[in-house]
Length: 385
Length: 231
Image (cartoon, rainbow over all chains, first blue to last red):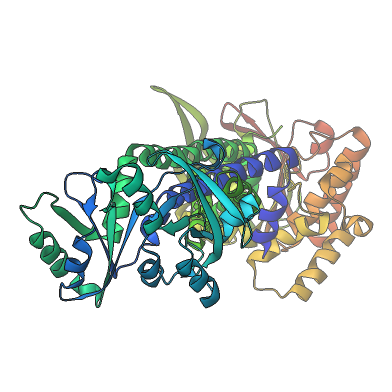
C-alpha cells in the first residue's frame, strides 16, 4: 500500500515531464494500433473469405477469361453445391476518385453463394428480374446517397461505354468484416451488350465461384476441375477463396512488411524516450532510495517503486493511446473507405496496444530499477546537499 | 565523566580503506572504543578525517575492512545485507544533515515509514507517530509536506522519524549543518532532551563546537585515528 502510494505520488511529481511522457506513449501506442489496423484492413478480404468457396480462373492469368460453357461442366463435379461467375467490370462513377469494386455477376446464382451479403427477399427478387438492376453495399449507398430506384451510371474502362443501372437492392454485411462497398449487376446485361459491340469478348467469364458441399472437399474438387480442363484452350487454376484473395495481397507484400516494421520502430523509439525519462527520474531519486534503504527498506521495495512508476506511466499512456485510436481510426476509416472497406480496431489490436505499453514500461524500468535497488547507501546519501 | 552502567556499542580494531585506482587510502586506522548506554557522544574532526565513515559503520550502512562492531550484544559486522537492513529498522534512528525526508510524503507519512516494516497495526502506528510528532512539538504540522515546512521543522520531523521505533541508538550526521542558529539550538535542545529524558544513546558527527558542547563526550578523529577524549 505504501509503495503504491509512493508510485502514484512520484509519478506526478514532475507533472510536465510525466504528462509529456504519457502523451509520447499514447501517440506511439495509437500509431502502433492504427498501423496494425491498416495491415489488418489490407488482409480484410482474406480474413472474410469463406472456406467453403473455391475460385476458378484462367491458369495463365486473371486477365484472361474462361468460356461460359465451363459453368455446367463445373456444376457436374462431385462435391460442388453451386456455381456462379463474375467479371471485374472496372466501371468509374463520375470520376476515378470515386473508386469502388463493381462486378458483373450471374444474378440468379451469385448471391446464393454469398450468404454474408444480406438482402431482403423482395429486393433480391426485383434485382433478379430487372436485367439493368444492380445491388449495392450499404456503405456505398450511404457514400453516394443512393436509394432504391435510383439510376447509377458507370463509365466503362474495360468495357467501353456509359452503363446505366437501377439500384434494386442495398445489402448489408452479416459480419463487421463484410465488404459493403461493392456493386453487382447482371452479367447477362454485359454479355448481351458485348455480343453487339464486340462479339469476340462475349460469353466470357472472369472467374467462377464454386460453392462446396463440404469445405474438406476443396483439394479434391480443385483437382477435378483443373483436370477437366487440362490441355484445353483455357486451362483453369482453382484455389480456395482465401488463396485467391491472398494472391492480391501478396502483390503488395513489401508495403505491408514496411508498415509492420514502422509500427515496431515507433514502439522502439518511445521505449528509448521512456527509458531516458525513467533513468533521469531514478538518478534524481537516488538519495531518497538510499534514505529508504537506510531506514530498513529492502531492494525489492525500491525496485517496486521504480518499476511500478514506469509501468504506471506507460499503462496510462497506453490506455490514453487506445482511447484515442477509436476516433482516429474512425476518421481514417471514413477517409479511406474506398481503399479499405473494413477498417475497425480489433480486440486483438487493443490487447497488443496494451502489451506494447507494458513492454515499453518494463524495458524503460529495467536499468533504473536495477540501479535503484543496488545503490550503495553511503554513496547514495553522499549525493545530498 | 558520566558513569557507564552498560556498554551499548563496542568497537574493536576497526580498519577501513578506500581504493582509488591503484592507490589505497586509509580512512579508519585501528579504531577501538566503547559507548555507554544513554551516552551523548560527539565525533569531531576535519573534513575527510573519517568521522562520517565511522558513523556509517556504527549505523550498519557501511562495512569495515576488518574489526568488529557490536551493538546491544549483536556483532553487526557479521550480518548479511538483508539482516542488516532488518536490524537497522529496529535498532538505529538516523538524523541527517539535509533531513532526507521524502518530498511526496506528509510529515505524518514520513514519520510512519520505519513503522511500516514492523508488524504494527494502522491504529498502533498512528499512536506511535502522533507520540513522536508530539515529542518534537509538530502535531499541528502532521499533514504538511516537507516543502511546506521550515528547515528546523523538517529536521524535527526527521528526529520524530528517527525515534518513532524507539531504537537502541540514535546516529546524527551534522544535524545542525544546514540550519540557522536558532533552529540549530532548537534541534540540539531536542536531542539533549531525548538523551536526558528518554535515555537515548546518541552518536553525533559535527563540525560545530556549540553542538559538541551538548554532548557528554567529544572524540576527535584525525586522518582516521581517534586522538583524544574530552568530557
